[in-house]
Length: 127
Image (cartoon, rainbow, N blue to C red; front, top):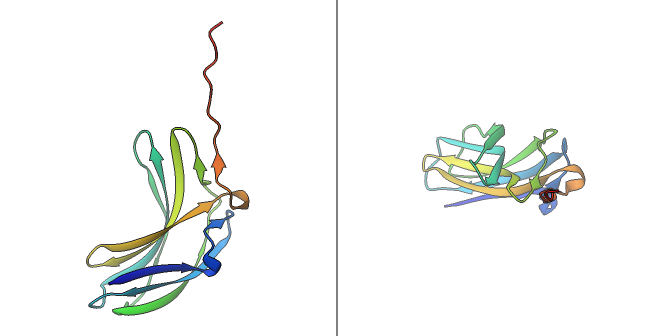
């Protein structure tokens, strides 16, 4: 079994509203019931993990071995960011069922393709 996501020019950093173009491929033993590409963001760090599913692209009538093109337009946000307490990352995920098989590619979605770095807040000195 193999699953792959190929983005044109191997690009992983994008600006908001840009379109990601590429292709997905899979090779499984029997034709899957479903195959879909998901655009999502997630947070990690302190507190609970949040996940936002932005778009799902189903591939109709999937066969056991296939390569399919895709184009996904990114939304305005939220921007990818990294801070002392929390980080937000984007990803494209290819999911195949049955079997709950998936693979993903991490992305940066922010102005000029640069994740926002949040400064560490210093506590004010007691006066």
